[in-house]
Image (cartoon, rainbow, N blue to C red):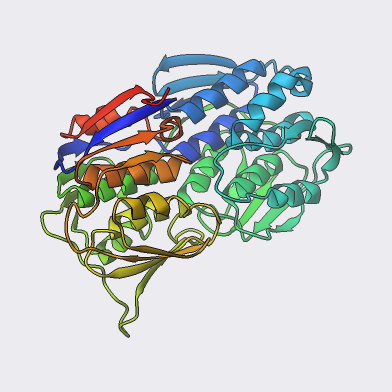
Length: 440
């Protein structure tokens, strides 16, 4: 297990570009299973979760050609379906939650799939009901094997289009149902669909491959099934969670940072939400400059009540951003309520921020009230263990803005979502050392 040793209190300066979006990458990599032709994906982040998914695809028989660290071609013309029954397959899927999205393409093209219980962050219950209800509406049948803790999913009569009203606007659920429906017989209507930019990107890639999808960008999708799909090339959007992470770092460290090529039009309300936190943002073309030399002050609502930041389906704030908003609020002037509606364990890392001197009241598993200190470097260094990707980056932001030197253990969690993060931040003036765990 590796650690970061982080010297806090240093201002950063310079330019940094967000890399490709992890969540989009997981979707479009799985979509390459829909065609026997070559699909090339550009701007892939070179992070642990993506490498693990590519490794799984390779083991399934997909031909992988890596042009460089961020460009990979996939050709699924000789899939080994027997591999799905192996212990190795089940073990790999259980370690990577994004692997659940191979099921939709497998059902569409081959009529069968195996789904062990997938892994991922331990951030509370993350149900798969939306996926199963959607596949069931299209004609899939399920048989659970308790001995190996896996579902055998088959389409005895093929997939047939249907009207599907999703019980929640699940991003992965929507993606999985879209990928199953593009080759189903007839027309599928998906209402209450997630419409995040990553879903829009997946749909646009599928359309280039020959799919027929109407309503892209809305929560009502109409998909007319086709017999086959062809190869294509696709470029990922910049990762909006990286964008939010760097804005938070700039604010916490009293820095002047320019984020380049961020796809401003795809960020939704995030820039405005940071402005309501009091952070100075200047949008210049497709770049964002954060020049935070003075303490930032959280706005109140018009009636004087406390500002609340809560996650919501797009175009609301992503739940992945709330950990960042929480830590940034600790040294703001004013108070804020962070309401994490979706996951009940994502706020449990606040005990470490409290150890650092933050004034936070954990109201319940979903809500935390933050009373900002109103000054820079109000936190003191400490030792921390990262429980998941987003808590890990929040801890790193806190350590960068704290007084003294902090140690963050289990940084493999951060590596799952952020490529070479210490190298990129050190180039801006940070002092982050990657090392073997001090307690090994």
